[in-house]
Length: 103
Image (cartoon, rainbow, N blue to C red; front, side, top):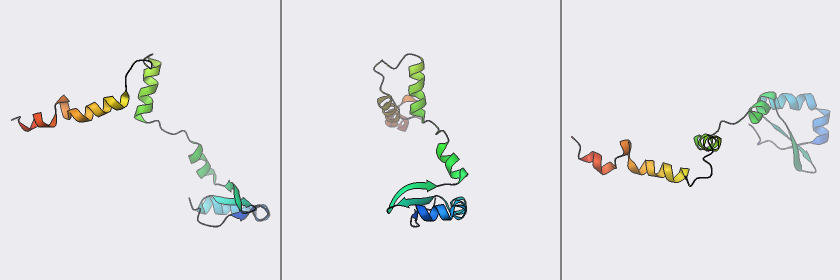
């Protein structure tokens, strides 16, 4: 998105709307101002659809939803503490120092 250009006053955008729509399609959103304050944007269909597309949920959000679905949201489980404990154990549940002495 190219938003480095100055904002366009509303009266100018109204008088040259096709030009600014083309600018939005080619160069990204066009800022529209009233009394030097940005009040709106002209955006391309592509940029609008990207902005409105549902965002992919994070793994933590998916786990929390699963816990709610299975009625586990009220127990004392702390997901952050759980992941911290996994990181501390190293791989296969052993601490890093235990792997140093294996054959």
